[in-house]
Image (spheres, rainbow over the protein chains, first blue to last red):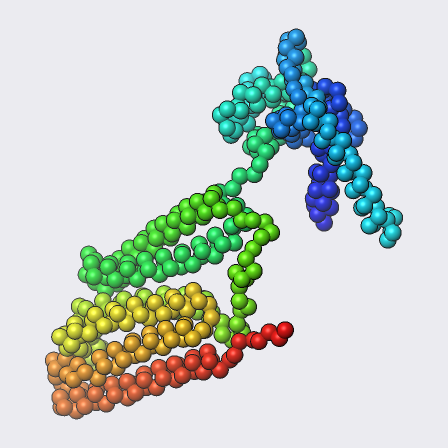
Length: 112
Length: 336
């Protein structure tokens, strides 16, 4: 039973992952710093999920990246592109709408 | 410990397309070093790599989309076709195997022949199953690649008919068992007849084995042999057709009827042919039983006559009851 709970929870949160990641990328971040920021805010995302996701968003031109080679270990920084900012605004609007709609549907019955 | 990291990275990127490997390597390396302190211990490296997870899964995440040999939309069709093709291939291989191996074998004793024919036929069936599996899979991989299933569109006319009543269903298991028995015993019978090895012997009062002459006359047996082979093919064919159809329809029952009539008629004509019983056999049996040749011959003929009538009645009852079942039950009408 616990497994079923977990499965639905993971499924529920999966959709919010993109919006959460995008929200933290108005200023440039590198992979690990972004992961730390999310973990600090209580968002549970695995490193093995986040890094490939960043790459994918970059290939879709939602993120822009640059290598910082001034350090002895190079670092790749990501930030929202113009397209990314637009997408983020759009998703936030849709998110707010969804929250209201879902509340409307479930709110009347019970508030557990 | 830097070697551990490189091995991990290699295990991830070797699963990815060649052109992205270097980029992903750089990304991943930078990320891993960010997660480590300046002078990391081996333990630290292990924790970080474990946190990134199984390289196979990470590579999958980098690839983005799931890959299938045959996508889930086609899986149902694939499995249905696969099942039918495997059954048909196995049956064909079994028939061809039994026939060819029973005509061409090295063993001389009946037991040895049966073992040899059986082993070779099993071998043929297994390789036929692999061939069938390969062909169906290959065809579906190609279909899957070039024909994507539209998610919501479908042809309303292509919806399947409702299944008929349950009483018209044909048991698959019964059909498979029937096919196997027909092939095994039919082939053994054909083999024995071909070498005219049908003997009736018994233990004499002195304990010695009475090796009698062959029961049937060789020339008659040999002239009937092609018909027996045809009869076996038709019977197995009819059973296979029933297996695939899964329920009694007019067509299936027609095929079933033809099979029964052809094999029945051949058997009856054979059993009633003049001089079927070997004269030498009659003479030997007569001497053993202290009867005249004529008495033995008449007794056998009477026995065969009764048996053929019995056989004919059974066949007629079977055919009539099958037709009654098929035609008398009307399909369910759906009222608007």
